Image (tube, rainbow, N blue to C red):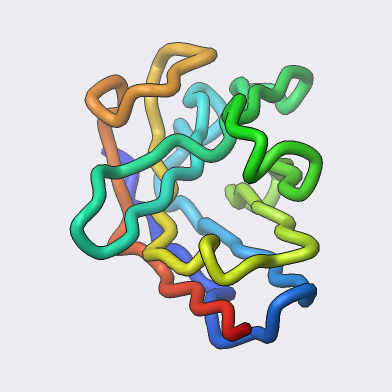
Length: 125
């Protein structure tokens, strides 16, 4: 069992940056691949980035709208995964979730076993 708690969201102006954190409980955190997803109102949950259990491999959404602006990382000693978001745009506004799963890479939400409650990111123009 893994419990996930996201933090770091907030209101930011376009062009700004945020660093999201996802803190995990449980001794088996470092056996899970982790992913960040986002969900805007009325839209499906969308893959943003993933990282394997050791942090040696990462995978990002192929969308041109996100490419090059987001960086995923993890610190297994702290049971935490991060999402650094730069050059934020109004279209990045969404509820951001982290998920834990056994497979990497995994771009589908159904492939994750555990989810946090999400942290809201709002980007103003």
